[in-house]
Length: 408
Image (cartoon, rainbow, N blue to C red; front, top):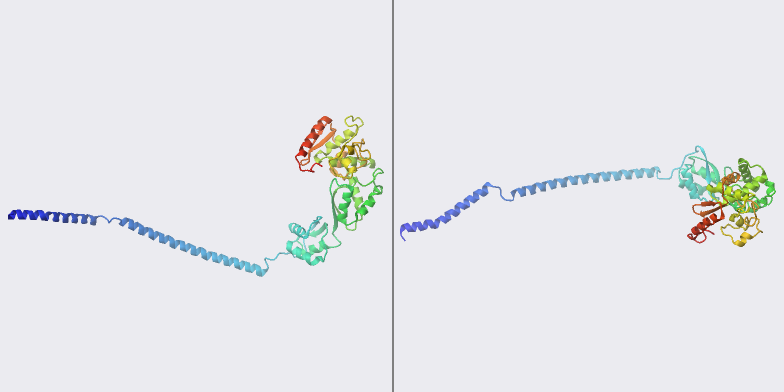
């Protein structure tokens, strides 16, 4: 190998080294000119971390603020409760008295102390049921509040209200509620419970109805004991009470223009049947149908009223069911299947609307009626027996869907 060849080989041998060095420097320079990979992401992450920290600081601030406010509120509530306790604000309040406008307060039959206290509070007679019950317990000494009507005042002290309600005299009265359709013996029982007058006292007076102004055909007080709510003076006698009730019945008859005692007895007998047989909406129509049956030219029923209610009254029971034998029994003076015309007398205590209907019956063409639904009181009227039988089947079908005893 000559010198030129040797130098040539050396240059070829060194050229790759110089090229690599140049390439390395160029790449390094390029790296120096552009941002390092991932530097932007690192700055974003750092910024995000800074924002998250700021948010955490704000959240901690809000939590601390709310905690402080909560502690303050709880302390404030506690202070209020302590003040209320010290001032007695949790204790039931009572009116200082002496009370305002006079009011009538009614104690219903069977009402207990709690119900009475509640009613007194609702009507603003006393301020607190508890205070009233405490006052009642301290004053009762074995006594009980009796049913009746009392004169009290609005916004009166509980102890004063208790004293009036427990009083043996003064504003207290005897209370009795007489419902329509009650029979004489049932009325006497209610009167006795309300007044504590023995039933026997009322029964003794009923044996001589003429002494109370009834006509000669009346053999008891049935029909003349006008229904309603009564408040009798404590010293009222059985005779006082019966005279008042009979007087109310006579007054209603006279209001309808019925003044003759015998006609009054007749109207009351019809009214009692109407009361037993119909709902109030049908009083006038049923009264008209009864009048059609009482007409001399009635060929449809030959003067027979045919009321189940009159038959069961004569049998001394209340029922919708009567047997064929009972319908044929002429020994029952109230049997309007066996006897034409009206029964021996009224069969219950008819109210004012029934008396009005009997005194002024509607002019209708009907002879028959039947209530086809005892729940709704729906009553259907007819001119002929065939049509009436169709409605009677409707009633029997309704009864077949009811519980046992509903139609008996």
